[in-house]
Length: 364
Image 1 (spheres, one colour):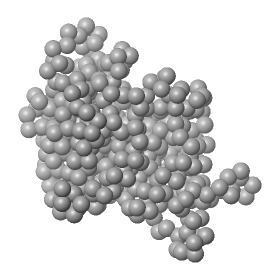
Image 2 (image 1 turned 90 degrees about the vertical axis):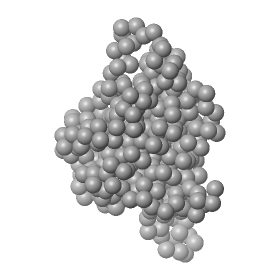
Image 3 (image 1 turned 120 degrees about the vertical axis):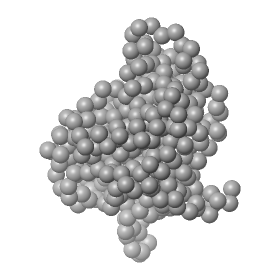
């Protein structure tokens, strides 16, 4: 695996994650167009990765299939790595995911990431409709091993899938008498707990920690990952990424308003009212109870919001404390315009390069 260098003057590699935000008053086509525009900007400003997360039955996001969106973004970008942060593997057949990401890798060799998570990415009823079983999470480690076996076409003798092959992939190349692919999707284990950290370490894979989820204990998870790490054929030493909720703007008050829209969406989810991104004015006018106000304030303050300089200070403090190799900005408030402006401001702060737009995007 070839990981990114520190981005510009930042002491870490910088990347972006989008959930395909579709706020109240915005149609799906506009939300997806905003994701495309965000990916182009991240590509042109020298960010290392652009990931999308898998969610279902949520009014605030239009990306239910990260690989489908990644296929579109391949034609819209030229340099940035693209992928899922992540694919919720218990929702899918490992063979199907291996085929989909094998196709993406064939379309954009050396640019595809596959982050694997075990959460359903939705509510309980929708999870049941997706997974058809309450014990889907129990088999996550075995599913990851199957997926790796399909991607590398490496099952031991006697394995029931020994003669099952993911196409495109190494087996197809051999059958067609052509060289085997020189690159493969970069597989990450995602999570926000010691469980996922230990699995990533035992498999010798890079680990991405989601700091945007509640009061997740990043220090314990990273310690468990590093202590349990076993060198593998793809990674000789631990490699870590942390994703953080971010709302960056020229006006710190407006950035905080943007962060508050995401906090309100979390409150609505806790109340089983549906994850929606309400307009900032509507969020400000909401008459919250004392308990609701505590939740709203906690999630707003957990977000890295403010000017680029303010957010950068918090990012660097987090990096100094945890020693993470990469930082991924999770953007997705009500305003896609502010999200795009935010990653531009951080790029300027750290002196990331201005790169030429791909021809396909420049022609539009």
